[in-house]
Image 1 (tube, helix red, strand yellow):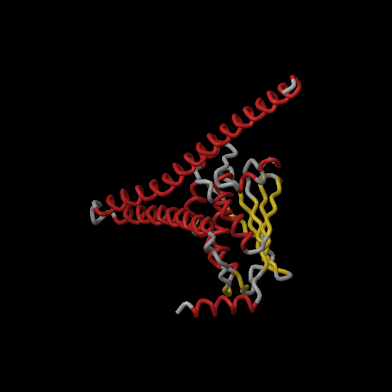
Image 2: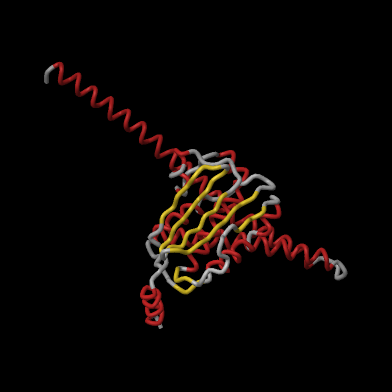
Length: 272
């Protein structure tokens, strides 16, 4: 082996060593993110569950004449149960997506009614931050459309939850929904700090943390927007993010054809 070959070999070894060090750092960072993710998941379940147990016990121990206190506690229990339900739906959805077991189930859906119903489930969170949701939809009487109701509902829920999380107190969240050219378009704009261009793709990574400080203050397990992305892709839709005064997210999802809806109904019947 010549001297020049030895020098070249040393360079290659040095490059391999450096590459190995970089890879090890990335693996350690990935493990750290996954540990943080699991910790957040546990908190998202344990915290509301603990609150429900404690408040239920308080109601049981209340004097009979303290009906107002019981009513207030019942409202809190309902709020915590709704949070738990939301987080469990996200966990189950993520598991189904990961396993490749999620299919599109098209059914006739009243989209405006569905959106209003989802917004109501966040009444407590909105009240806590004194945030208002303004529905700026021009047409509030949309005809029913064929789509996957459960997936659209969870998409709405996660986008609204995210908007509340990052909006300033006493802020306004604008939502708009419309159906045209066989597409369903949903837009949501929050009053938060916005997202930098180089972070727009990263927010859909379930293990990514753009800001540890914000994450620790607002909570969240990182599943929500990754599920939104997976569901939108499953429904052959698109996502667009814009920075205005806050963050504006627009999703466009093709409406299922009548044939697709009929096929889904037929498949359901075949199961029985």
